[in-house]
Image (cartoon, helix red, strand yellow):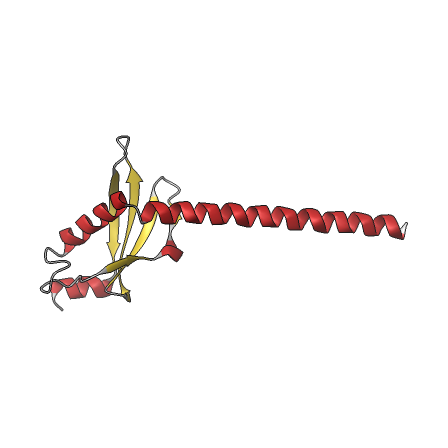
Length: 127
C-alpha cells in the first residue's frame, strides 16, 4: 500500500513539474514575441513619430527628448488588442510615455492613445 502511494506521489510531482516547465517555456516565447514586435523597425518609426509630435526638437541638442529605450519588462498585450509599450526617455525611469501599438490590416503599426508621465510633461512644458 505504501509503495503504490509513493509511486502515485512521484507521478503527480513529475506531472506537475513537467506542466510547470511547459508553462514557463510558453511565457518565455510570448515575451520574446512581444520584444521582437516592440523592437521592430515599424514599431520604432511609430514611437519616434510620437516623440517628435510631443517634442518637435526631439533627438537634437535643443530638444528635451535626447534618447529613448523600450522597457522590455513592462511589455504586455492589451486585452482590447495591441501591445502596450512603456518608453523610457533619456534613461530616466521617471520620464516615460506609455502607448498601445496595434497592427493595421496593411501590416503597419499605429499608436492608439498614450500617457505621458507628469515629470516628462513638466519638462516638455519648460517647468
